[in-house]
Image (cartoon, rainbow, N blue to C red; front, side, top):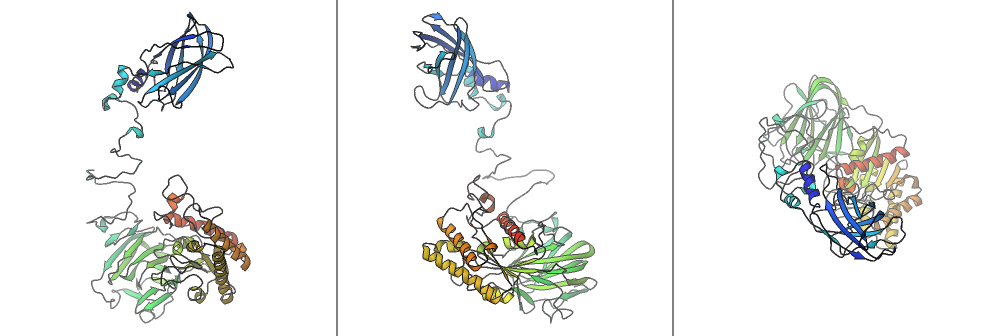
Length: 590
């Protein structure tokens, strides 16, 4: 550090001599000033350097106290000062010495000039500025500092002084050349991101720990989640359903003809209705939407293992045990083959298990040992809630805010009738229908206790005039009246439109106000939840430091990230808990 300090101070240490003549308002006819710079004693670099000057009054050395103003410039005659200091100096036989410091960033190797102004101490008149400005030149040792090698540097080099080709520990890095790890133990610890799509020759039997990303495909044994020692997947080579369970196991199916007991009440089905297709159980699609919603199959198990049967149709399997879900998902590709997932525990015990199936699943039930006990899950009284929404609320991978919302309550069964690109008025892309046109099929037929409307962002583009706002209000009122007429005991909750950044358009506020007014007219104003007046998402996703959109909004600029889904769920859960004391909230368990 001493060598670097010397180079910096020595840059200013060259002795300079200049003479200025300027009239003063103090009565002194003229001033003659000689100045010079000297290096400070060797010490830690602080930006200080000494300034030496000589002041004469009509050829006679001046004595007494004066004020000297020092201003630093990047040009010899023009420009704005880079820094300014005013020091009180005491002259003895015309000489004075003072210390200057313009900060650590004032000198970057570019040209610098110093301008002085002088007046008697305590004088009210302006400083008498001396001209011309004085050039600050480098000493021989400071010239060396510009070319110093790595061996001549001591201390810490700031990040900003490093070249762009140097990787940093606290910043993202892109390597265009080959990256080789030669750690002899072949063990690398830390958190790794990505979807693993370019990994090859990976033996699942060698994986340890919890898998916390959606798996493209797992063959073999992988450690999975709390209380589960392994999940082993076997894929049948035949395309047909197996003729029966393995020896010592029985088949518990949701199709009575295949169930060992001829009964289908061994589990509790939540989140959606189901349809039967031969031996397979499939989800019921929301009206006007070509994909699917999530379903949960909850049951109690007294044993040490069970086997899940899935037909390869492009789906995800999650397993929660006694409320714990680490969010890992096993992907079953659309290969039309039979996939057997054997879930093993460390010991035989009573557990409550929830199979979380999403995507285009085809569920064949369970194989369980003849010595195991199996019964429907014992859960608090469930309040069924159906969310009518758009793509923000779609739940095709058990990762939307509706899934998160359900996990925040012990006794709320959240279903989703959410169709991307739709709204109260907007029917979305061809083949889909708006909110009011799917209520009877998706909501009324399933008799929920609560209906939560979560839309409006897709009606935003329609808000061009007051007539459009009137049409939107009419559509809102029609939705609320349809629920009231068909389900008189059902409670209606209405969210304002979700917005993926700080609200910034007149039309979205018009949508928000229109939905709010419709709730007032319908007499459900107390159940309206405003999402914009105190925005749940702020800033812009691609502008770091602008707000939480950087972590809550995807790079498409619209939809929520996983963290964004939890953000929405927590806001909604807070509002629901305030309004409905019958809801039993809890902290999420993951």
